[in-house]
Image 1 (cartoon, one colour):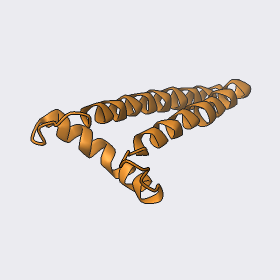
Image 2: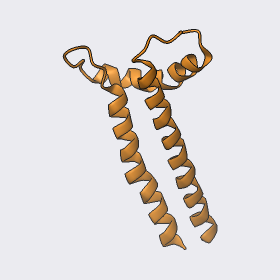
Image 3: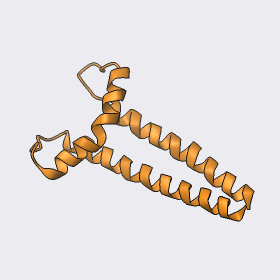
Image 4: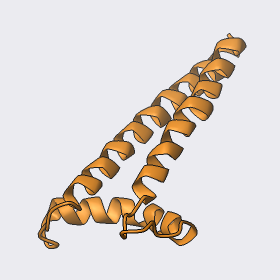
Length: 99
């Protein structure tokens, strides 16, 4: 049973790292949106391609705030915090109880 507990612990740690990295990719995307980036730059294209599928789904569900402010990155970052607090912590707790 300790193998399954270690597996769950490893999955939780990898998931936490992936969520943390995606949050920083979102922050980078939000920061470059304040300037006029070159759309042909490889970094700009990576940030756009990595975040747009999720942000597009959130934008469809969220109304645009007055002034045209896009709050979809904030909503996604809050979702990441929720997943880190709930899902990752639940997996870690489960793995510790199985030991």
